[in-house]
Image: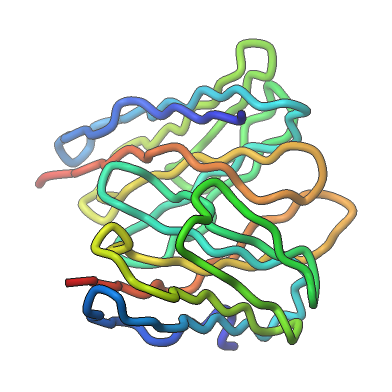
Length: 111
Length: 114
């Protein structure tokens, strides 16, 4: 059974801090790992990672995958209150199969 | 550009009542999914479809049925609602592609069963 474990489950930081969110996984025939941000309603897509060691970057957010150690991290630098959200990690095995999600990390950024 | 639209957005049911949640996508996507989200549980897959006329069970299918009679619509039915089905339900879709693609989510349906 495919499994995704995120840590920490919740985190409170001050504006300007840098945070690292973790996602480890066990999946047969790994295909891709995706990060989503969920504020109030629908999850919105952040990154998709398929290869080890290649950093994906968007503004203050970046992510990298380690397929040998079976984990990914999501970094957010210079955090802002608008970064407060639940960050979801999901994996997909062979083919365009449904995503399997972790429980999410709830990030709260306080001014 | 509507994307993925779910109706209704909110609903309160009494135990034993039935209802259908509708998901519609206008992106011509092959794949559609129904997830439920409970506090501290992330998103769990209920049922999914890989094309018109096909459905398959996910991680938590009991108590739900689905149908995909048209490519753009994916219906989730509760025949006899139970309080354990109180949750937020998300529909998602993704296109067929040679490489991997993201899934696009609807805004969710908050269902309360009393």
